[in-house]
Image 1 (tube, helix red, strand yellow):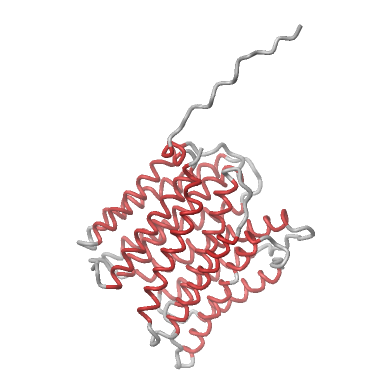
Image 2: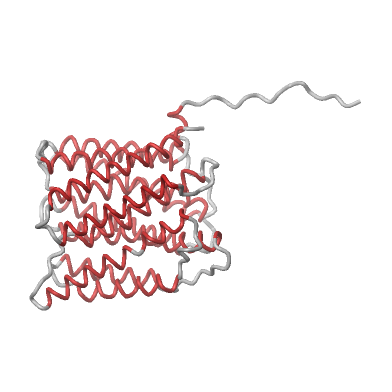
Length: 399
């Protein structure tokens, strides 16, 4: 005779929303990145409208905060999730990443508070952020060292980019005492932010496409990243020394454009969650084409004014689209949902493209309502991230 037990398995222990948020690195870092982004950009908008005044330069506030308080947290959430997979290592323990969360976000809030009173006082906040960043780098580096997998090229390049992020922060510190702002900005924007996003893009976009679109074959250049890195180094050095970067910008435009044509990303065959990412990376040739136009016109002593249009083509068109795109994929995939972009998500991606175009035109044609355009862009940024948070951030609090 077979006896069937009447005992039911015990229910899993109940958890709070906060415990769920802290349970995985992508959850807490994505949430914190969105909150900090909304906070920093809102204050920036208030400064432009004259409602607040800062005791720090807008260059420091805007560039440093966006790079090391906001974008770094999205990088942390993504890389602390995928590094263990790439390197066949255990998942990162909560006790390892939570101190990084507290240091970067505590430093971010302190940076805002101190920027209202004294630029030199913000050094204290930047020190907290730097320590958190170093702990993040150490965590990624230890996974790299402990891994026995043979394919470490992409993770090695990511660590190289993170090392330049560390150098950039040290240069921002040094800029309080000696003028090295151009080198701090260049190394942080190109050799850290741009390089990280490009490394992830060249690894994940063709990979996702090959797994999704029947018949697609990955076709990447062997030395693509090496070529881009060399040209970026030249650009940072030339611009840091206030020299014309025509050679570097032309090389970057040619290298990236050639590579994208080689990839043959199938826009028409890919689902929306993929083709929006394909769209994002085409902002890179647009940005460097604008740089080339400016550089060449300057060589002819007839400089065409483009303000910061190329930088925002990268920061808004490329970085932000990739951030929202990969963020959506990770949140949906890790919650057991199918990664997809419905009409709601596609609308958000469309708004990002409109915001990017508006910021580019504001830079090229500043005489046509420049300040109104800047405030509109800030408002759109807040709207986009607010709507994205409304739909996706709540998932981070679920079990």
